[in-house]
Amino acid sequence: MTHVRFITLAALGSAFLLAGAFVFQILGYAPCTMCIWQRYPHVLAVLIGLIAWRINHALVILAGAGAVFTSGAIGVFHAGVEQGWWQGPTTCTAGPVGDLSPEELLNQILTAPLVQCDQIAWQMMGISMAGWNAILSFGLTALWLLALKRR
Image 1 (cartoon, rainbow, N blue to C red):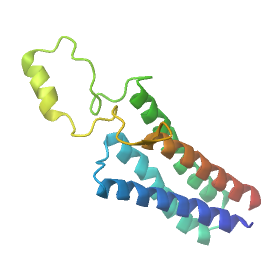
Image 2 (tube, one colour):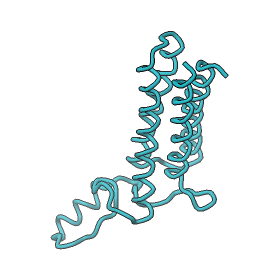
Image 3 (cartoon, one colour):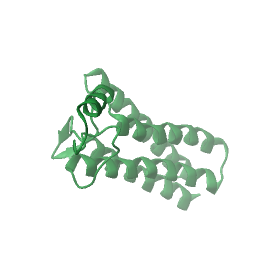
Image 4 (tube, one colour):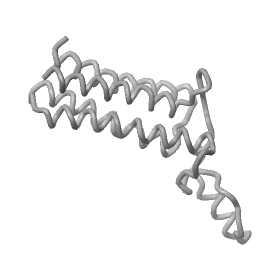
């Protein structure tokens, strides 16, 4: 298979992951902050894929690999937050109350996003959407790297 086909598969993979995310959103699974963060690198990867069809340069292909790898890394971090392995950003997780005053607690409740990053909204085979994004993004990284090898 030529490097252009690997680039095409990788870029289409990112496009399908984005489409899937929007389908879940339409079905009522509102994204949390970290879910949105995982989408940006896929948008970039699709754009890089379009550029890579015209510009046959190793750095362009590496940029595509870097974009989807970044989404996968965010997915791993997000999945860890969901599992309680580590603390996520305080802006989107239900952290400990600690020594908050009633006013501070009320402010935290009122400013909290509707969808918490540490809550699993959907999972398949025990793997959350963030986990699946990580797995699939690392697979797309491999496709980009195969394109680089075949270049």
